[in-house]
Image (tube, rainbow, N blue to C red; front, top):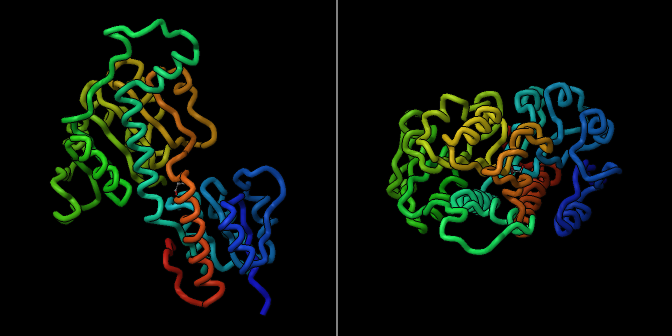
Length: 322
Ligand code: DGY
């Protein structure tokens, strides 16, 4: 039997590439390791049975509509699926799979890293040293805030949010959360549930955002929501950049209403809203949430488990998103 042909849009960890090459005819477009534009993707997908893509690859409705009939599955190397027009894939009968669970701890670690960096002004402090401008220890220099006893508001209490809550409890923070629905007590673990945005926002000394991208969540954190946060609050986002109104966030950071922000995700990546470059109280990371060796291997294997189910065994994939 001929092996199925797989379009692999990005470089993947060596163990993942080795397993893919064992079971598939793998096609890798030439050129730099960057997200594929629709035209290049369509050209490369000619004759393929499956596409192993990643966040940033442009799989909008028009592109999906124009995919060759041979494509039966799109496996994304991400938990997020906002770069794929799921309805268009459903309409074409193309399965879409993703990689939930395996990246929850790694992403929560990056959220906690940003919370700590913001609270303790670690980015500013590091830049001071690198600029060779440190003049020595001083009692009032670069004072941050203690996290113990502060309220951490988690927007989106899925697996990543729950991992962050576990870490923050260990640091003595009090957990509040806003979610589509209230968690059962064994998962809630004493966290305070908010059924309304305004009460939730008012209870956040630190807000950590973990909601998906897409039209429904666009600019969830807008000027009005920011104004509801207590003065001096910290905002951290490791979900999707589109959920934040960048201009409103920059304005609140400049006015002092917000103490600091920590961002791992941006609307229009890899471009970054210009105001962030000028804001001293913003910590910026290049979408590192899931970037650990262990997690990226696990994400790759999960992609292949999904592809194998459909293309090798004619079975339902373990992680179908559409
Ligand atoms: C995810 O898995 O969605 C991460 O944000 C990487 O895209």
